Image 1 (cartoon, rainbow, N blue to C red):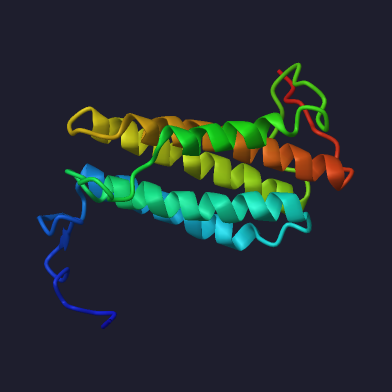
Image 2 (cartoon, rainbow, N blue to C red):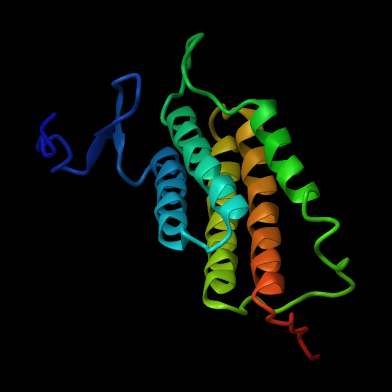
Length: 177
C-alpha cells in the first residue's frame, strides 16, 4: 500500500464508502479526534501496571472500531461498528476499581504521577471527541453506541488515572474555591 496518493491535496478525503468530503467536515473532525486520542493513549503504555496496560490495549482496538464506524455513513452487516458490548466492557473495567479507590466526595484536580497525568489528559481529549461526535449526530446519522462508548471511556480514563495515582502513592488534590 502506498502511503501517499495525492487525493487529499485539495482538502478532500474519502469516507469508507468512497464518497468524498472536505477534511474539515464534522465527520472527519470526529474520527480525527478519536485518532488523536488513540495516539495519545499509545504514549501512555506501558503504565507499569499490567491490568491497566491490558485495558488500554483493548481501548486502542475499540477506538479503531469507533473510527471505522464514524468513517462509514451507511454501514453494511459485518462492517465494524461500536456495539453495546463495547460500552458494557468499559463499564466493567470502571466497576473493577471500586474496591481499590476511595469514593469521590468532591472534584479532584487532574494530575499526579506522570502516568496519572497523561491518563487525565487522555480523558480531556476523549471528552472533546465525544463533543465532536455529538455535534456530528446533530446533522447526520451516528450510531448511538458511539457516543455512549466515548462517554464511558472518559470515565474509565479518569478512573485509570485515579488508580495509577493511588498505586503510585500520589494523593489526590481537591480544588480550592
